[in-house]
Structure formats: structure tokens, C-alpha cells
Amino acid sequence: MYPPQFEYIPANSLDDVLKLLDERGEEAKILAGGQSLIPLMKLRIARPALVVDINRVKGLNYMNMEDGSLKIGALVRIAQLERTKFPSQYDILRAASRQVADPQVRNMGTVGGNAAHGDPGNDLPAVFISLKSKYVVKSKRGTREIPAKDFYKGPFTTELRPDEVLVEVNVPHWDGYSGGTYLKFERRTGDYAIAAVAVQLTVDDDNRVTRAGVAFTNAGPTPLPAEEIEESIIDKRGLENLLTSAKNAFDKMKVNPVSDLRGPDWYKRDVMRVLLLRGIKTVYERLVR
View 1 (cartoon, one colour):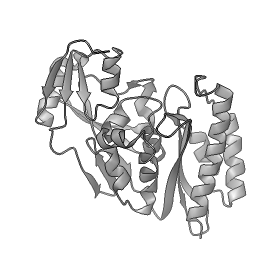
View 2 (tube, helix red, strand yellow; view 1 turned 180 degrees about the vertical axis):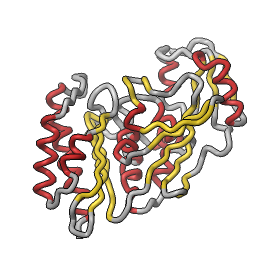
View 3 (cartoon, rainbow, N blue to C red; view 1 turned 45 degrees about the horizontal axis):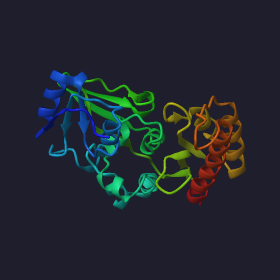
């Protein structure tokens, strides 16, 4: 199927993008990697009157450590995350990026597109939530930062306003003995997750958890922050204590995965529990000394 007619404008600068969105925000869609937008347009689920191609915009493809945080430009390709040797505190970025779809999608798909699209099955949003990241968005009215955990409101629905574009993911510094992992269970390689979990931990010299980030993919209509689980394992020491606390907190959470061709809701919830405990075990055993 072919998409309905639309106007296509390749923007040459961020100012051009913001001007177009200011004038035609409700009618416009941003094209970065196109790995989500183009299929939706071909299926006529998305029907933008204007497609603004931002691939020529300079200054949006970077990864810098600055002011105590890792700053990732929106046009960084997912394959770049996969190939980058981050400090061990950010191992989770490589762990997740190599599980996104297939090489073709990773070579074209962008960090900004994956984060901003609002698909509950996308992998990077849960990772950015677990890392306590913020999204930097811009419009002609100015710049604002939105915590990743507050960005997602429903399937394909986010805090991004029609005249705004996501330009950067700001990942705060994780001190000391920190690390994480992303565990994904799928029917076949490259598929959307049946369920997935992002786990990020910091431990002190006594092997006590001092900071934690946990979030789930495909656990409902949005990526799901798991602050209850984070709170349950803070100040805990010893693997058995961590696993028991995390399991009890998970069992009390309101987790509502959707029954579909990938499995019924109860099955997905069981998979999430297993992945959560496995993720905590993997990260904690890597960090303790």
C-alpha cells in the first residue's frame, strides 16, 4: 500500500525545522531514520500533510560527556550506540541497542526517533527511564527538559507538543560501582519484545545498593517505570535480600500487559518477573567485589 499524498521538505537547519513546526505543527511529522514513520504512512495509519526530513540538520549527531552527564544527540543512529565503547556505568546502552530489531533498522533508526515515537514496544525508552534521563525538546518558544519517566502518556502519545522536536537525550552520571543490563524475551530475533526489562544499579564499598533504576518494555500502553521496585532494593545488601524485595514489590505493582499474538497477559507478567530477577542478579553479581 502507498501513503496518501504529502509534502516533503528536507530541512537544512534546526531553525528551519522549528519554523516549519511553528507554522504547520499539527500537520507535520518529523522524519529521522524513518523506520517507524514510513511503515505507518504506507499502512495509512499516519497521514501527515507535511514530512520534515531532519537528516541534513547539523549538530544533532553527537555523544559527549559534559557537565557530569552523557549527552546524546537525536540523530545518533542506534548502530552508533551499539558500536560505542561507553564507560562501564553505561553498558546498558550497548546491551539494549544491539537488541533493537535488525542491522538495517539499527543502521537507519535514530535515538531521538526511537525515544520520541511513543511505541510501548520500542526498546530504548525503558533504558532511558532506568538511567533517570531527561529529554531535551525545542520549539520557537524555547527549550525544556522532560524526565523520560514522565514523557509517555499512552500508545504513540507523548508530552511532545506539535511545534516541538526532541533534540537530545541527557543521561546523568552514575557514580562509583554502577552498571546495568537490558534483558529482552522475544519470539524471534528482531521482533518486538514479549517483555523486556532495563535494570541499572549502583553499589557502595559494602555491596549495598545505593541507587537503582528499573523499567519495563511492553508492560502496558507505555514503557513502565518501576519506582516501587527501585525503592524496595535501595539500602539492601546481598543477592537474596535484593531478589526477595524485588519480587515482593513486583507482585504488588499494577502491571497490565496486553494480551495479543505474543501471549496472554498473565504469561507476559510471569516473563517480566523472571527477567526482573535475572536482570538484578546479573548486574549485582557484576558489581560486587
